[in-house]
Length: 291
Image 1 (cartoon, helix red, strand yellow):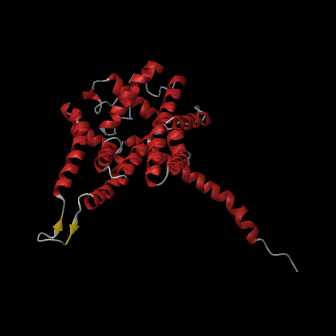
Image 2 (cartoon, one colour):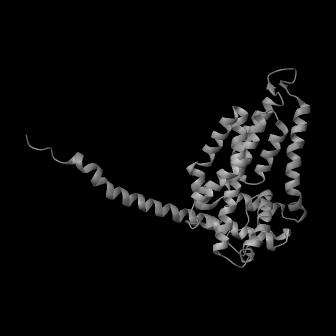
Image 3 (tube, one colour):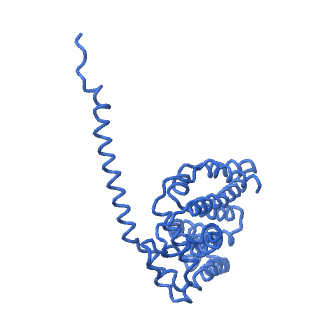
């Protein structure tokens, strides 16, 4: 554990805080403000900012927990009306929160590596996960919490590998309630658990299927319990359908940002091709010297 903290602190020391910030920096600041300053019944209806809360309930709960600490760093960041607020204390706090989330990535990678091999392999896996350039750019420069979420995923996979099926399934269910993008892994989990834990085999027996019904029921109840804990507060405040709409609809502002970004990249690519073509093709197209 102490080595994990040291690795995270080393990463913090190597990352300048005053880097480029995308719109996602303001997105998460606004979510801190929404979950801290407004009642639960208003979280998924708040529209003062174009960057509305559009993640599942467990990530909203994470933002609420984070906002309790943010109040000590700079209370002004927690005002919903303070759009585009980015004081130095806010920048430092939000950057450090991502780095702290990487501790979960380190521990999850170490757990999975140790489960599949030795303790040394666990630490090497953790180091490789931490220094990956993709997460470094997306999380620490662009600004996201994917390292923390991948840590939950790695813990889930490690539990499945170690035979702790129900805890691994519960962790993955919690992950789905933190970020909906992990739904693309749900079919893999479904087939793995149905075949490996529930013993599902088709074309066998009088009904054409063999299934451990008891394991299936226990597994289903485990997943349903996680979803119930995550969804009940939202359903109790009448925000169920609103949350579903938010989590399944891409806001217009994201589309505009994405399209404008694609246009800029396309222009730069064309300009780069115009500049580089003579340099690359020139030596090949020159007339050969006379003998």
